[in-house]
Amino acid sequence: MDLNLTEDQETICEVFAAFFDGETGPARARSAEPLGFDATAWERLLETGAPGMGVAEAVGGGGASLADLAVVATEAGSRIAPLPLVDHIVTTRLLARLADPSACNDDVLAGSAIVGLALRPATRGIARTVPNGAVAHRVVALDGDRLVIDQHTDNLLDAHLANHGCLPLAHRDLADAETLAEGPAAVAAHARAVDEWRTLTAATLVGMAREALVLGVNYVKEREQFGRPVGSFQAVQHLLADLPGLIDGAHLLTAKAAWAGDRATAGIAGTLDVDANDVTDFPVLAAMSLVAAGEAAVLATDRSLHVHGGYGFSEEYDIQLYYRRARALTWLLDDPARECRRLAGMFLAADDNRLAASAHHDSPQANPETGRS
Picture (cartoon, rainbow, N blue to C red):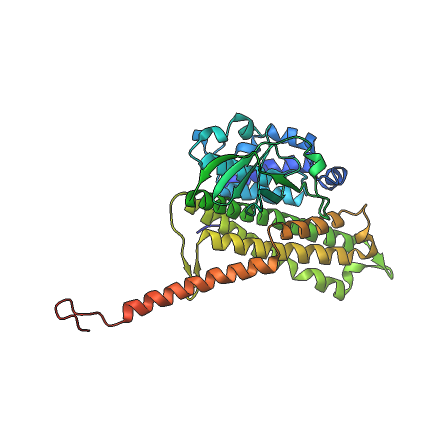
């Protein structure tokens, strides 16, 4: 397993770093509040082919892997791009995997029709707190055991839910939604899409954490107190010194989750062996990456804001944007504590299954002729 960027991924990184640096960034994110969507930047993004790049070429997409998409998401996070790119990409991949190819049409692949995913199953016919629900023309949701698509576009902006992170959150009514798939296959398809969302959101958080560290370091090198840069004081240094290891660890875990996701797409089953420290199971790694990246982003933005002093809370300083957005993304799927408990349950279930299999293997077997052990 090699988690280093390939030559193609290096190119993807350079291209999208340049795009997000030129078309997005803190100033654009600030001007896009409170909705959290920059329509002009999205129109420019369509020219890059990014909205459909995660779909197979046979369906009309760019054929990018989940690992490729994680590179793009990291760059978007570092420039705090006010674009629903992760949600759109994840949903296009879900639609392309369904039996009906018309669900992922040219408008969706091009990005002129924005699509989104309700992360949690609907409650009483309402898809609640859809990440890009206030700007998505179509939303895919799980309603019971049905995977449905809502195409209501009337008064979307009026449905926007005010939130601290200035994300385009909204509830969506599924009363007139069309059914895309039913049964266990529909539930599994939704779960797979949510795991991809976990992975790409983790990549976004890694990018945000990296940039928050840069903002903090640059500030303490420039800001002076008592005739010296505040970064020369050991107490300030301690706040920032251990962040690179934490952020790099989250980055590597996210890269491994994307790698595992691509293996799962290829039909290669993952493993979950705690004793052997062998974890290649995609759902587990996706959850681990979101938790790790969320913790890294929350801590990095907190400490960077802290070393900014009172200025960190001022709207004209960029760090407050990263601080708010990191917490919003970390809580968007669920309380991180519950996500940790869910992850622990997955590990315990795997351990119980292993012990049960071992006990069955070690138990005396009956003699097929006598019926005795």
